[in-house]
Every structure is written in C-alpha cells, then in structure tokens.
Image (cartoon, rainbow, N blue to C red; front, side, top):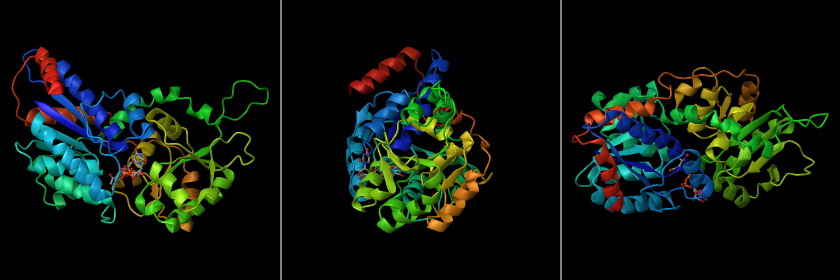
Length: 411
Ligand code: UD1
C-alpha cells in the first residue's frame, strides 16, 4: 500500500516525522508475508529557507523528500493554486492508496482539494482534524474546515475535535481520537535538545564571580509572532510590542522572528523596539532581542528553559504546556482549548493592557507539566495502525518493500 505524506510549512515537519518512523516500525514488525506500507514523502516547498525547512529535516532525521514541488511564497490564492497545479500530476503518476495531510496550512488544503477530485481517488487522511477557532478571519480556519470535510479518515488530537466534527455532521466512524503527533516528536527529541549550544551562544548564562563554569541561567521569556492579524498591520504589531515593554525592562525577551515578521518590522519602521544581533557590548541587557528563526532542537531548548513563552502560534501552546512552561497566547481565541484547562496557557488578546495583564499573571505561575489525554508519544503508531487496517492492500513480503520503494522513487 502506498501512503503519500505531504509536508509544506514549518509546523508540518514535526507532525509528519513520527508517522514516517511509525511506518518503518510497522514494516519491521510485520515481517515476511505481511502487508507493507510504502511511504512517499512530498514537500510542497511552501517554506523553503534553510531555517524554515532544511534545519528541520536535519534535526528530525527526516528523509529527503521523494518529490519537491518548489512552490514558494505568494498570496493565498497564488500559493494554494500553485500547489494544486503541481501536486495533481504527482498524484496521477504515483497513484497512492492514501494521502496523509497534516495541520492547517495552505499546503494541507491544496492537497486535500486535489486528492478529492483526482482519479483514482486516494483516501484522504487528515492528521490534527477537528480543531476550530471559530474565527473565519483566520486563513487556517478555512483550511481546517475544508480539509476536514474532504477527508475520509480524521485523526483528532483533543476531545474538542470530536465535538466539533460531530456538530458538523461528520460520521463518527471516520473519526479517530489518537493524540498529538507534534507531541510524539517533542517527547522523542526533548532530551536531545539538551545538547543544543543555543543558550551559550546567546549568552544566557549568568557570569560567575570567579570566572568558573557558568551554571545559572538568566531568566528570559521566549516570544514568537507571525500571524497576519498580529504583524501585517503596523498598529496591531505596535500595540503588542508596547504591551511587552514593561516585561522587557526587567527580562530579556528572546524573539526568533519569522521571515514575514522581520519584513513587517522594517516596513512599519518599528526597529527601535528591538535589539538586533550582534549584541556584544550592548549597554541594554534586557529588551526584545530579535534573532533569526531557530532549528527544532535549539528552539525546544529555548522553550524548555524559558520562564515564560509568549506566542501567537498554535503548536507552541501545546508544546509549552507539555514542557511545563507557562504560556501567554497573543490571540483572542484558540483552536486548542485543551491548553487552557490547567491554566498553563492563557489568552491575552492583542491589546496593550490585556497583554500586560496576562504576562503578569503567567509570570508568577509555577512550572507544571500538563499532559492531555493520549498525548503519550504514541499518536503516530495509532494512526499507522488505522491506516493499515482500513485501506485496501495486498500481501507482500518484506523484501518487496524495498523493491516497491525503489520502483516508486525511480518513477
Ligand atoms: C504559514 C501557515 C501558518 C503557520 C506558519 C508557520 C498558512 C495559511 N499559514 O504561515 O498557519 O503557522 O506557516 O510558520 O499556510 N517566508 C520566507 N521564507 C520561508 C517561508 C516564508 O521568507 O521559508 C516569508 C515570505 O515572505 C512569505 C511569508 O514569509 O510570503 C509568509 O509565508 P507563508 O508560507 O505564506 O505563510 P506563513 O506566515 O509562514
């Protein structure tokens, strides 16, 4: 059985990596005479910078994509349309039995739309189905709704997903509550992140009196910000940044800035709010310190050692509660309500005062890990079990896996 797995943008890589590993484990365990699963990895190229894409392939031990579509940036229509145009011939040539799509980015919805209409039609499996912010201004919300309604197999991360899909009339037999593959990846790599040198490189250790080996970390907050609603308009971005000014007077705020945010800061002329690298000999020890986007292991290292995470990302809300680091979400809503349950994540809104209030509240919150039901590191294995059981396939032997893989890749 051929399983095509699509990735495109940064958060997709962590969600897809454990599925590829679980397929290998399934094949190894199946042994001679059993059905094997043949993965075909497609990268749309929605994200293409070294630090937005290549670094994640390296850090997560992801194999080189079998197919790279090289789509790049563009307006939503241009990007989505271009992905559709380029993925259609791939589907007709490779004829996968299943297409697995993850998350809520433009690559996800574009591939769902093509797979739904191509002949022969593969089964469409959506990983991270059912999440809803109920905010139709958010491009991802349209992507989620359309993708879920085109999918045959919907893999859900949290109970709210089951409620949302049932309310939208999606038959329960298509829906599987399996847990969170992004957390599979976090659990698999969290210890490896300890070998990251990023804390040293950023000078985050307190200098010692006697010049010995530094041990204590200076407290810092970690900030990410990239949603169009928060960064595209000058007023919205300035409001958030001013909401963080007080914190930045006493804390260093480390800000690995997404390329779109960096562009917007310059377009809006907001550079004065930030410290840019190199910071050596800086007379301002605190402030918002803008650095380049980080690879996976360096980012996890920064996250797990932070006093506070401040973000408008979806996945980072989930990762920070699992790491036990209090989180402030710079949004009015979240499609991941489970992260709010134990108070480890709060919605701050985007106004100066509400951001300040949420930061004050979360700064005094004790570290406390919150691991939602089924976020146990085994979501991908559950997904692969379902894929293997519900999709058509033929018996073959384990040596045929390699032969078929080669044949598909040589195509
Ligand atoms: C996309 C996803 C968003 C996800 C985010 C993670 C959609 C609708 N949005 O948003 O859900 O949270 O990825 O990062 O799919 N750029 C580069 N280099 C890159 C990629 C992007 O410079 O490798 C710049 C370009 O100027 C581009 C802009 O970032 O126009 C936006 O990229 P795009 O993929 O359109 O959306 P994201 O904001 O990254």
